Image 1 (cartoon, one colour):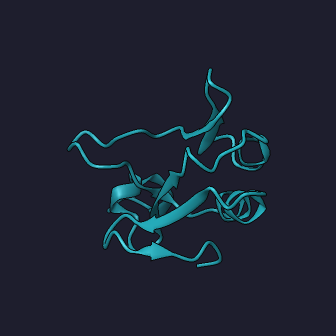
Image 2 (tube, rainbow, N blue to C red):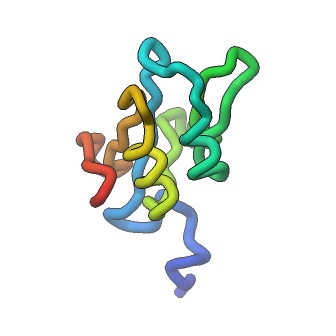
Length: 96
């Protein structure tokens, strides 16, 4: 059996999340990209976007909820970020 840390995010269990950016709200402050550079980045347009765009199956790519990602969502000055459960698709609080 593969250890939890080596499993793909889609196999990680209930802590797998999808981060979504409301690009109408995003002001490109960069706090999210600084807090969770493996999950969020600023694009050429200066707005945030998830690093993992889509899974090979066509849906949004899930990833493990880390403290850094939860902080990035909390730190967004305009609340443009939201976390959703990759399994259920429901909105999840960042301090899950």
